[in-house]
Amino acid sequence: MPKIAVLPGDGIGREIIPEALKVLQAALEDCPVKFEFDRYLIGGAAIDEVGKALPAETLDACKKADAVLLGAIGGPKWDTLPAKERPELGALLPIRKELGLYANIRPVKMIPSLISASTLREEVVKNVDMVVIRELTGGIYFGEKGRNENPKAAYDVLLYHEDEIRRIIELGFETARGRRKKLCSVDKANVLESSRFWREIAEEVAKEYPDVELMHMYVDNAAMQLVRYPEQFDVIVTENMFGDILTDLASMLGGSIGMLASASLSGKKGLYEPAHGSAPDIAGQNKANPLATILSAAMMLRYTFDLNEEADRIEQAVAKVLDQGCRTADLAKPGDKVLGTKEMGDAVVAAL
Ligand code: NAD
Ligand code: IPM
Ligand code: MN
Image (cartoon, rainbow, N blue to C red; front, top):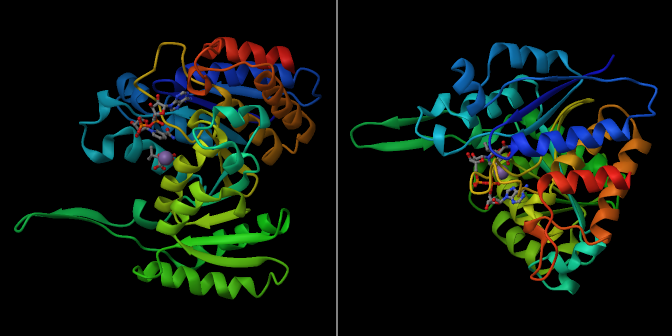
């Protein structure tokens, strides 16, 4: 029986995960494969219960599972702990590293009925359809960090090994090959040595993909181009921190951060989570948009379990409820009827 480790985490993570599970159960009702769902503690919730952001039991279960479904972690309550004990550095980064999840896939595609939800003009966003591939287990997030005393200073090292760059660039080319055959590698090669190295390797790998057009773009320009003319992008591949920042920005092209799903992969194994965080400002109020998590669950069915039909059904149900005018607060315009987290989950189940 395939195993899915479920990690609700903190804040709105605890509200959106039950909605995704509801949708998964309904979508899998007639599926001959039966899944085992087991819940584990992570993040602040784990610190409060067992004193550690990533308990050994959780890590072990995630290693044994076929896939992991994660809500979000972190929040003000744990922000003042020593860095390594915090949910982010004590759980999220280690779980990514331990599971070898080097490729973070974040698709941004405009769903037609959300064009008016965007804060950008219709003609700018209406044809948006891109995939951002973010390197997830290297770069400045994982380099040496520390403090010097006299004079006081702090540092974070941005280091990439050749094989780390090569495998993510190859995935970029493979993904582009299955789409519109345009790969944009984003870097800061006018300043950073690691980016010049990244670019050299991208050029080398390009020789194996003559059918895919490769272009390079500086990250500052990429941020501007994403807002100016986003439909120029097909696949973007970039290092860890640039990808973090650019995908929050790109999420607004699809209407809301509450719509941006993600898959963190190492081959077939994956951790699936929305791109957003625990949203402490709206946590516990039934206000969060559960669709990014529901769409992440669809990605799980597609990438880890090859259940393409079931994944399609979930994605179509999401498009349908949005067509019907269902809106959580983050998507609503003045005058729209606003649904809560649970009501949005129910609407998706009804639309399946
Ligand atoms: P955030 O993504 O949690 O929230 C940013 C803004 O977007 C907030 O105004 C929030 O209300 C809104 N928002 C986010 N998700 C939403 C949703 N589904 N529906 C409606 N509105 C939504 O980012 P932040 O405030 O910078 O971080 C809060 C905490 O989350 C921090 O502790 C941070 O480290 C953590 N975080 C965790 C993850 C993760 O677990 N993968 C990702 C990002 C941030
Ligand atoms: C994300 C988050 C995390 C990251 C934080 C919470 C460590 O912002 O998943 O995008 O920066 O990777
Ligand atoms: Mn982020």
